[in-house]
Length: 156
Image (tube, rainbow, N blue to C red; front, top):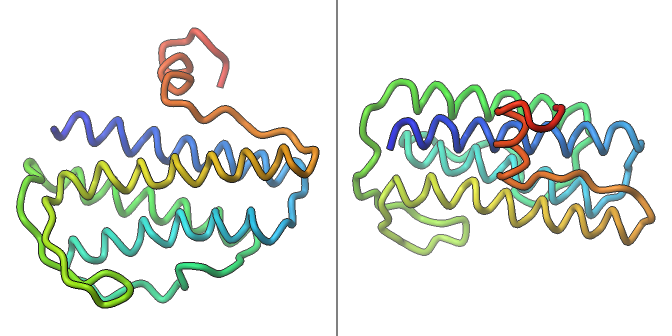
């Protein structure tokens, strides 16, 4: 699973970077879009902090940040996840935690790690839809596009 997670989280960082670049190039200041991007990144910190038995991040789950701050968050989140993945060989273990509303759950860390990237994909889709509503151009963040870029079939 380690090789899968290395690639999965590299894809996630690539997709976040593509969205942030598109937002920056189009000078997007839409509150809904910036809040969704913040939510994606804050959730990445929140889940990793839970896995590592750290306190919740200081970031609010549903707040608006400027693109420059979102870029910083994206870089930090990617670095932390990559460090976590590099420092472990196995990820399958049960973890009990409280969600943000205080409910108690137990899940396998592998499944949480899959969820974190899937969660980002879902919300990046919402961002793409909102960009279209505003008459702006969304960017393709499909996993297969990432694969095509990696294999040289598409330009980055």
